Length: 504
Ligand SMILES: [Zn+2]
Image (cartoon, rainbow, N blue to C red; front, side, top):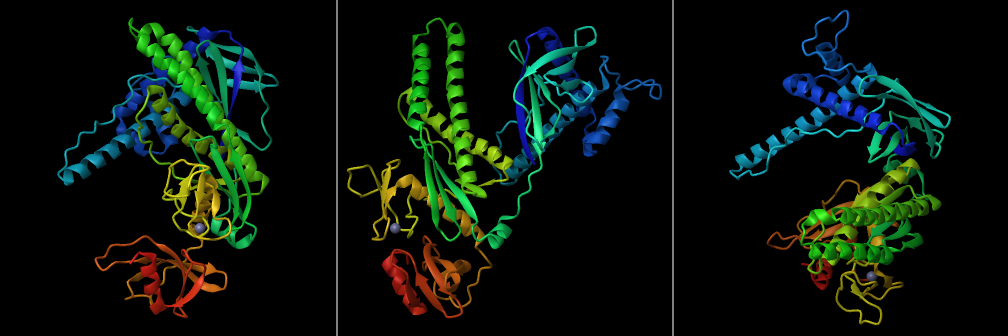
């Protein structure tokens, strides 16, 4: 299911009524949430049934003249049901958090550890936007009718609509009424069923199956993309830049925040408004960039017919030393990557392209062609050592294309890691047993019936880093593709290879 939300700006009128409606909605949620806390067992029922039970408890009708907990306000049925469903959702999430907390506590106590984490608390305040079920609104050609609470009664109001039209094939869900300061918005979600075939099946059926591998960075090239085929063929590359300029703008804004802070003798309140504007600016830069970059990634992937966009899992940000603006800026650059991933995911899914993530370990350190550890360096610098973030890489092995853009190398590694996941079949290790070698995975590759990545175990049971090798269990032969050009070896020779490798 793909979803997207279209935001419609409404005319600024009857803001107080919108506000009253919103307050009432939240009071109703609070009322039903309290009721659910007192009747926790209800949550075991399906949502529809909980709704019926809660209405029995609270709504007076001719069949139900004396409910046990009469509702304090006169609410339209659809408004009430939206509030009840929001309360059920909130209660479900609260109790599931509580259950998880209890589990962690038990686990810690069973291990004899001290457990200091605080239990989750039910919300004390409610700030949900009124959810408008049918019967509370009517969308027309260029206008919307809303049923609002005036403070005394309910009243239909017409608002003009200007905004983009809805794509074909999308199903509209219940909108939310959002008040932002004095601005009134209608957030209308749309849903579409998107069918995606299993990747295994796609790989089998489509010899032209392509992916778009993406390396996200905090330097100028925010995203480095590569279109790859399963056999490793590289179809196209794209660098999506602009990181330096947005990072510069963000850093200047953060610098101004820092300056304001240091100047403030009169307490933070005086500057609150200025700071708020600056923060808004910083957020806008990130939001804009995340949308721009994600859109271009998806366009690039779609242009080449890629079926999957592959990222690496994003690591945690390690705080660096330095000035406030610098630290803050770096942190935000890391966050930006997360945002780009998130936006890409939903934008791609609308087109039936799925998103996947792979293990990030050494994607920048290994040569995508041969697997050797590369040197990473600046232009005009000797290709020795590994300088994190430097633009170029050079592979110590002599092969075609052994140097170039370090981020493109990382992107290819990310793509290869994705394919490696799908050409795995059942592990087999009969003939290699006893040689200090275990087979990690086996799959079909050119000419060789079976291919395996090997893992060498030292005598003390330590596992050395895997080397890239191919094994044919039937022939009892091994080809090492590691740092050498492919060569065939019989089993006894493998151990010699290992020692050259420096692994065993
Ligand atoms: Zn290489």
